[in-house]
Amino acid sequence: MTQRELKKGSAELLILSLVEQRARHGYEISKLIAARSEGTLTFQVASLYPLLYRLEGRGWIQGRWVEKPGERRRRFYRLTPAGRKVLAAQRQGWLQFAEAIRRITGIEYA
Figure 1 (spheres, rainbow, N blue to C red):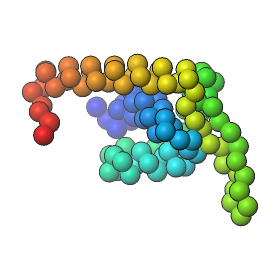
Figure 2 (figure 1 turned 30 degrees about the horizontal axis):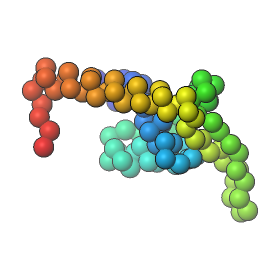
Figure 3 (figure 1 turned 180 degrees about the vertical axis):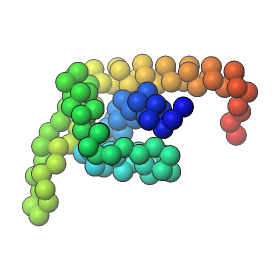
Figure 4 (figure 1 turned 180 degrees about the horizontal axis):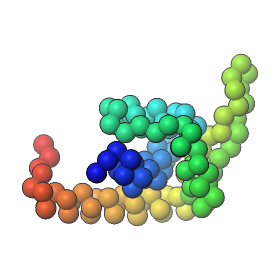
C-alpha cells in the first residue's frame, strides 16, 4: 500500500484520536501525526482541513475559533459525544484488521 492509500483509510481514526483528550488546531494535528509516526505519515495542512470540515459536518468533532493576542486566529477542534462512539468503533475495527493481517502474514510484534 502507498502512504496515500494508508492515510486515506486511517485519517479519521488519527484525527479523532488526537482530539480525544483536548482540543487541537489543524496545524498541531498535522505536526503530531508526523512526529508520532516518526515521519512515516504526513498530512499537508491544505489536505487536512477539508477532512476536518467533513468530520465537523458529521457531528464527530466541533470547532471553535480562538484568538490570542499577537497570534493569528485558529480553529480548535474537539471530540463530540458522537465522535467518541465513532472513535471507539473505529479503534475496534482497526484492532480486528491488524490482528487479521498478523495472522495472515505471520508478523509478530515485540
